[in-house]
Image 1 (cartoon, protein in one colour):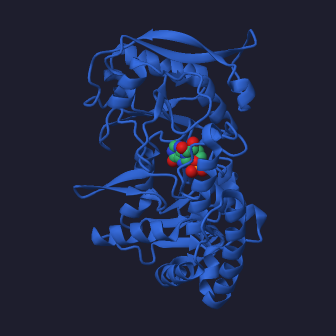
Image 2: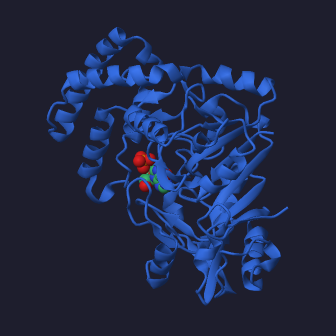
Image 3: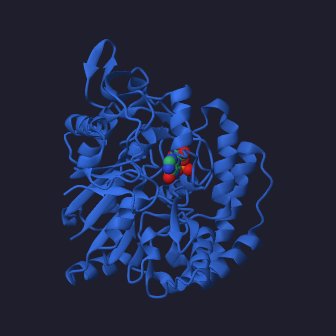
Length: 425
Ligand code: IMP
């Protein structure tokens, strides 16, 4: 049984909780795209710990973690995570495999990310400044890229880095008047990264196919959300990878045909960080209420997230393009105390109603949400463990999302703890 978990909104849907539930039934957890721009909090013993690159399966004994080809890997961040987990008694020896084809994020990518964002003023994308875009750009450009397999030959890597840093310095000085980046500290850091990480570097495609043939159960863990997908999201306000389920096969070399169960995660409302259109945004006291109750502040950057009503048009689109089997709806408890709740069931664009989400932002920014208004509930849902025990209004709310999206809601988050989750059969 292989499963895939993917976000259906603009990221931060609370995938970690569902990944956690499914990881308990999996032998291997695979991260297939993105980099240290993602973030999820895991609880180890009584301490909370943020992971950005490491698949969340890391905290489960006996679960193997794979960081696949299409991840852009910041070695400094990953080493910090490996060391942090080791200090908490979690050893990843023979439990972590990193693709030799995964591209490496180095300091100059982060510098470039910041310089570009700063230079764009009100045209900035609102990136996480983790070097994601510049690293993927180097991957596509090919001539100035470094991959994890390159750490195996440090002499050759030093020559490559000399060429890259020279190119970057000319580029960044020309475009932004930036100070030159010294080469030696980058080479020195790479030596340390290589020493710490080479032991984990393998051909993960071969590893995964061997595991599949041996009948192992794999969980593919998406990062960010479908609406941030480079090709299918709200470009240019997206990340630089295929963060939808469509990125899974190319990201790790395993066909989507081999996924038996695909779960799309959506919050009971909508959030987004960074810039870009957001039809159901609530730039008012209701948005503020949701932000505070849902602790809607970024795990990676701490930025306040923009909050809005559930956009079922967007969720339906994401579920469709990923051929999602079921939806996990997180944070239902956050909506308690609101008299009325709205669900966006269609958009009005140029006077015409449509139920299809236009990912093109010129059209999306014209979209006026068409809402269903439903009564809210006052009750605290945290102790509810069966769907039938939810207030009738909460059941109706979930049912309406199922009707509009055409997908069953099989998991419902009713509180931050792992146990505060309703699993419907
Ligand atoms: P980048 O991925 O750092 O280049 O950022 C591009 C856009 O994606 C920005 O709007 C970020 O806020 C957003 N983004 C990237 N990663 C995440 C995430 O894990 N959750 C939510 N938004 C994200």
